[in-house]
Length: 389
Image (cartoon, rainbow, N blue to C red; front, side, top):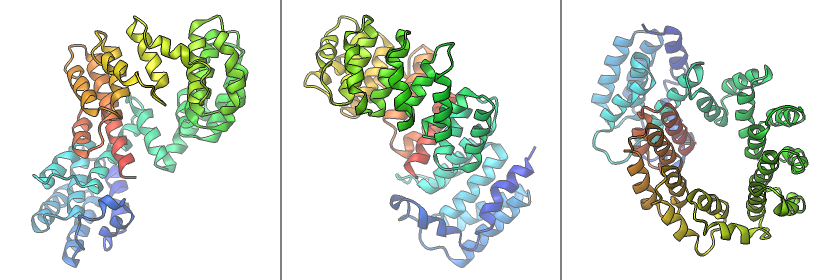
């Protein structure tokens, strides 16, 4: 059944700009502006007729017009967008990939403008589905793009006590969400590790003072999480408070303090981190090289390279993520191997890591849009939006 409300919503905005349809290229990133030639009046009118049919819910006519427009103007991105929108309405958001790829043909370079429409529609649909496992990830990506309705939806859920929505908003620097998380730290009961991590991801100076207070918390996991969060925030004012934790009776707290200090360009704990790089345990070595990754030491790359061959797939994944900026082909080989693992959890994490660390070309991202893992598909769409912002 055709969702006519959805059709009208998607088609209305495009219908309003039919005469100047290709003017949208003027606001695209520079790399996306060079491909399309100036549109002719017949081309604009044909595409406008297609949008009009789509707005009226006449999918059959809109599809025929899109096919005719592509046949007459095979390089027209505007015609391709129309075809993409028709198939999105017919078969769901990712159905728009098929007409896009037919239009692209054997051309070696993707069209970011058209592909962005598919990725954006995918994120909108996922964000609107309350039962989708990647809904909040999609909503956060759209909110980061400045889409006010999505941000308002997250804010409304956060105002009703939704902790996950509050954390998502804080991760993109929403001041009210950060303040709400700070208030949550004041509550006496329960673990606050997730809240502390979200504050560390916020990039907000508001979070520094309450995190400093947690360095003296009775719970060791809070002390360690607060130290790590302050390091990620780049809070140099925390250095005097972090140094005493190098003598904390709990080993993970000492490591967290050393890692945070190293991020803040204080080398008081670097000896501990370098000692851990020689540990017999792969997971410990991985934690040490991750802490040192902000400014790798001389032996760092060799240790990470060795960890990509570790027997533990989790260690391999972490090492692939770290080595990707330096030796992308090594990381690619590891992730492709793990992507064929018999363990579905390993396969999914390998795909997610690939999207996050290595997928900077649109051809790879198109492939990951079709990935059966919901989070991988959403992250691929979010990455496309980021690259075409």
